[in-house]
Amino acid sequence: MKKESLFKSLIALSMLCFVLAACGDDEDKKANEWLVAGVPVEVGDVYLTQGIEGNNEGYSLIVTSTGISVFQTDDDTDDFKGDGHIFFLFLKNDITTPLKEGTYTFNSDGELPQSLFWGQLNTMVDDRYINAGLVKAGTVDVSKSGTSYTITYDLTLELDETEIAVTGYYSGNLKPAYFLF
Image (cartoon, rainbow, N blue to C red):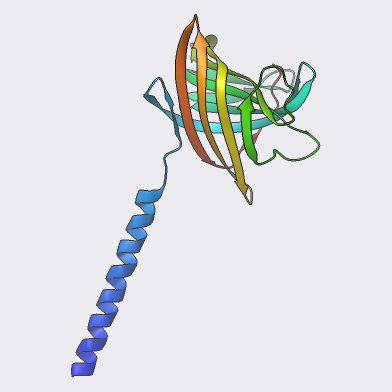
């Protein structure tokens, strides 16, 4: 009888440990969001497209807020519609390879081999783009596990001589898209 009681106690303790460990995992997950001047913005989707900006080739990382969707235009390119925010980040990178892991530091002259060459935050209202700031300084960190990317950014934007802090985190798959800018 004592062995059976001890066995049941061990089973109950094991189950309790399992439940507590599972709950701890949920609490450790970071939210896919960005902060614009301290105000949270929920990430909708994140897109990746190849492109050329001036003499620099690389990838455009496009982070959308909820409320923004993509549609295909008559010329088979993609565009956005809806109300919300869109953050364009042009990461200088060899486009013959997948997006490289590492830190992309803002450098508008494009001299660094791997840099954040250009970035812009737009607000969309009634399907119209409104410039909400250009990247002036900061970094974008990219890491990859399988097909999933983790993107973290800490940037300073400028709009009409006013600086705006934008930080963000995203973990998940990047959707391919074909945009003309």
